[in-house]
Image (cartoon, rainbow, N blue to C red; front, top):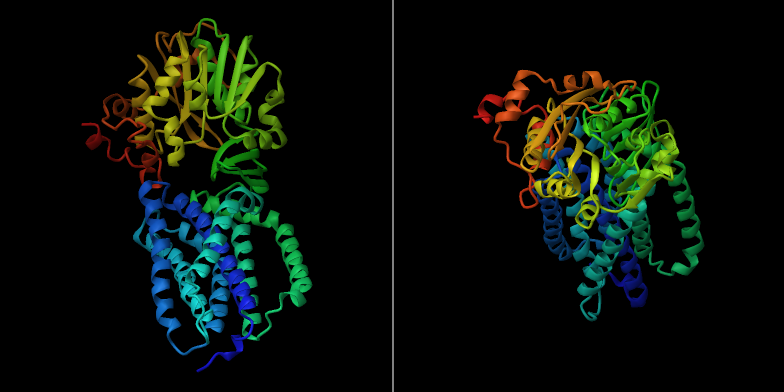
Length: 535
């Protein structure tokens, strides 16, 4: 079988193949970024899960390349096969997120769930791997010019470089996960159209350029007009992952991806506007007072004269609202992600009540650990208000070394308090944090509070010298009452006994176990195994 229709315009052939491989390379790395973020959320952002997903992605490319090499030697129409592959990959992109949502509903970390995840990663990457040998074969029809393998590999890789770069800073932040996959599918459809043009011997892009531009604008506008729908689908997806099936009829009103995390604002008729970071609820309008009063006020009650205050995290401003009730002379606020502050200013006015713009607050947009390491001042109270350490990136803010930096930045009678995992849900994670803090601070106490929208929430308060159960300042607020201060430390005997006698390892920079204990596999583990683990 001869393929003479490709002869006579080699530059045009190379241009068409470049565009096809560029688009498929762009979309393939876009898919990889999305799938890596999504699947690591489902099965846990551990080194093992990330390594398995990446290795499966590469395995699919390798197997596809091997099969494509065999196929390229067969007397078949390689151009039509390339077109068919692009269409199949586009169909994968359009349908993958609903499939992933169903996978997320399966029993967490079950064999079936893990197998389906790997299969879903393997299928599109296998098809992408097939394309490279086919593209090389297409460019070597007839007389044999310099072998174009390097050119094809460059085209695909160059597209992949831009795809992985732009997906994280533009595409996912604007369109979310669902929208990003749809966008990638559209790119594959365009690649298929170019392949059809190549097949019908129409390689003059100039005559089709106006039509292509109009089509791209139309599809781009359609995608952007559906942005809110994509946000809603993202929210439903996260709810499925975290098993929040009863979501109180919340409706997404804003969603974005910052360079650090996924940020969603949902509105609930029961709890008002709610802030979600990486799919986890952080704060709600109607019960933020409970959460933040018990985060901030116990420390102010036990400190003799709190004047210099530091807040690490807390971009929603709820902790600042509590702090500004007092006559502090210095209030420093360190938040890594300015996007959290910006979103909170617009959508969480009932939480921060204008305090994010208060002139008494000195705001620093930087990493809290870096700030502490370079800090020369001492504080009376340090409030730590961070997301739970479910991702390894947060482990450095729950390590022994981090709490040593906190210790170094406190006055001798200073007090620190942090919110962390609930001991009723993630006992090992809570115990690991408690052990790390107790290894640094002579005085440390554990307590929990029931928050209507979030359930049981864990806190730990610590000091170098201050007795954390003796009230020095009378505070009477809506939910916190210093006359009943000691009652917040009461826990069931099995929890008290476990926390005092457990052997759960401390999370350190070199052994960041805290994010492992914060995965779904440890959701209720610990309570059932306390007798074994506490020996």
